Image 1 (cartoon, helix red, strand yellow):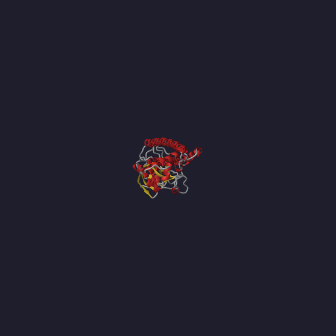
Image 2: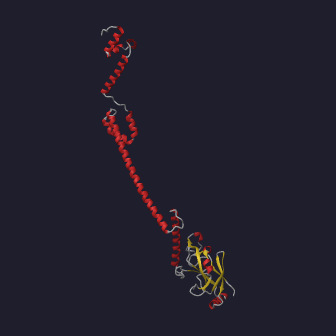
Image 3: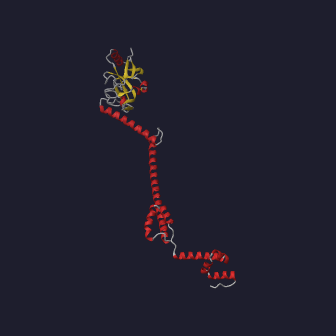
Length: 330
């Protein structure tokens, strides 16, 4: 019997509103068990096997080899040979990856493009949904999904989009946490908990540092104020400023401590009467000591004999007698 070639799949938009890229097809599972079913009835025995499974351009092709020892298979083969059955339909597992990229969509396409999927089987069908008839099987139950129900298809695509989004989020989170791509959920949770703990610790330490800085600043201001009070009181005490100006100077210290201190230091101190007297006495003692060490002739040449007579008559008398041998007539 001649082995007819069937188109099992192409990339045109199917009647459900989406299309599946041939480049994204995983045919390994199908190649290992290339059964020909009738109308996707996997609970019935196969009627043959697919041979020479191949990809040509955007099509998946295969040659049908019917079981000539099976009456049903022989009957189907006859229908195929006579041109009464012309359609094959790919059975696949639900899509593994989809894309909403506009550049992948064709006219009439209303749903995303399937970019990764796995072939399950291929059947001879009496009437397919279209020329690239498709059946998707639920991986848990193994039963065909009802693709005629638009909501089923939409939910399937949405779930894949969300799964892809969640996967991207997982990868981004692992990257931010500096974890390996192979990190499990427990590692991610542990890293997040550690991140939170570190954040809490840093927050507490930051608050403690702020409080310590506030205390230090308060103590510095108090110490500066106490020093300002001392400097102003000292300036009042030594007569550099009047007591009425105390508060004004304290405000100046608050605004600019160093310059205000320099201004006070530049004001000359006022000497008391007692101090002036003592300064005069000290100066006079120095002058008398200087004259006592000089002879009559030296004092005469310096013109200081009158000064000596006025300030220290006894010393004048002693120097006169030493110079002339007699008491002066005073």
